[in-house]
Amino acid sequence: MPNIDNNITHVQRRLQQAARDAGRNPEDVLLLAVSKTRSSPQLAEAIKSGITSFGENYLQEAAPKISELQKHRLDWHFIGPLQSNKTRQVAELFSWVHTVDRLKIAQRLSDQRPKNLAPLNICLQINIDQESSKSGFTAEQAAEAALAIAKLPHLTLRGLMAIPKARQDIAGQRVAFTKLRNLLDELNSLLDKSQKLDTLSMGMSDDLEAAILEGATIVRVGTDIFGPRH
Ligand SMILES: *Cc1c(COP(=O)(O)O)cnc(C)c1O
Image (tube, rainbow, N blue to C red; front, side, top):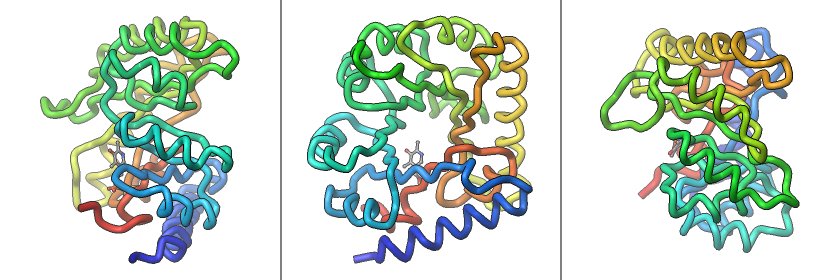
């Protein structure tokens, strides 16, 4: 069994070093542990090592873990493809959704967010490399979507998320992340002061340094915490 505690220490060090290299405060970057395919006992190990936020891709898989680990008061982030028929439960169980790729999904999440809970935090997924295999708004569609979603009452639009193409070199990796950061700045120039976006969800096991250098505020790391997925 991989040593989750050691892995987390190592990823935290990479995160801190990248933040320092960027002249940023490491505390401004959240390490989101991506726990798809991992069991509750594995998540419990990560909790012991200080993880408080988990990212899950599939509602069916996440729901029992959320219930089993309830006493830890965790933050659950939905980071998978989201279909209309799943929005109600996602709005009830999660505090963040990173993968809003249609206005209709955002409207349903707002309507279905329980009124006793804080507004649901939302990122727009952007198809930054314009790949037909990936979902997300194009950069051109993002402004109209952001202006509409920022008005929905039970959501807080926080920022942008992307999954760029895998690239080997850090310079190449940074290009896509720069685009996402520039798009965030552009949207912020259109939104009211009270609605400013503060979140860039970008960077995974293989490219978290490049993402932090370009301003990532949430890095989503699975493999380098829990080991390879089978
Ligand atoms: C699985 C997944 C990750 C984690 O990727 P690793 O390479 O295992 O770190 C991050 N973001 C999303 C959206 C994912 O689906």
